[in-house]
Length: 115
Image (cartoon, rainbow, N blue to C red; front, side, top):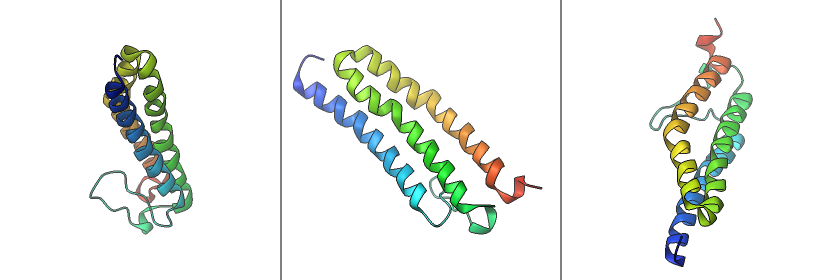
């Protein structure tokens, strides 16, 4: 990157996303009620076999998803192309990875999948 403004925007964007996902993970870990994955949906406590383990699995998912954003924030300063590729892979394929991971969480902790 050529100037401090570009570096600042890059760093704030990457680490802002990373911080958001890290906070989501922390919130999921401490929550006493089931954490929802999709915006606007509610997971009812009676739908979950073990709320504490379910929320810990959600926390792990979000914390793991934040890692590439933390790395890309630093990487993009020294190697902008590599940082951009990492962000692109995190955003597009990474979202599908999140969906698949959450489906595994559902299969493990949702009552309807336990039958």
